[in-house]
Image 1 (cartoon, rainbow, N blue to C red):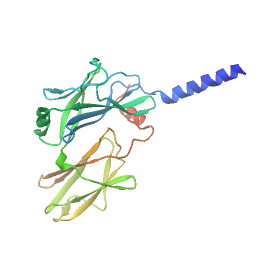
Image 2: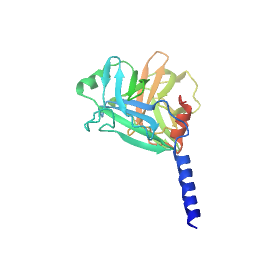
Image 3: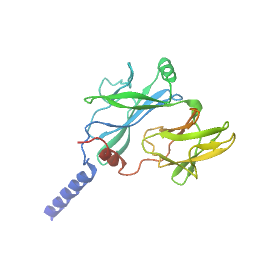
Length: 245
């Protein structure tokens, strides 16, 4: 009887390991979100690694400037003061590291043109990863409403405009419009509803940046908080779609 109990326990442990541990080995971390938050005065990076990978963000670099998460525990290449594990799935972890910005660093990012800039994210024992940093300015924050599993944002034209495109910066969200064809002509005060589908929250305070451009090269940028947690198996899905070996 004891023999069969031992065999059953071994089988349960083996099955648990099979379903919990990664099926695909990551060559490098998968960066999910990099955001500058003017209101919070922070840079936040979320990324996927294998659970037994001890690497953390070392540097966020733009041009010749580097920005570093604080480490007060003496472990210069390990966990930072603000490291969080946001999700654990299938042997992978979604982690987040945060850089608190000085006033000079805050001014530097506010001086950059546009709302998206290229950056390199460095991790211990990996080559720098090129990605984009989304700039979230506090005077561009807006409220949205929930509609089923989507978020609804209503844009009201401040003047007579012709919208050429509506885009977004986020890893997973998609956008749709009710009976909208581009170019979309709006007179002052007219509105268009924008539905954002499946906007998963990928960091502690993840926000989606919406950019509305007109035929006259005008640009209206707004951002809003994402609320929907990532579904089961999502980290594994992203890893399978990433550059893996």
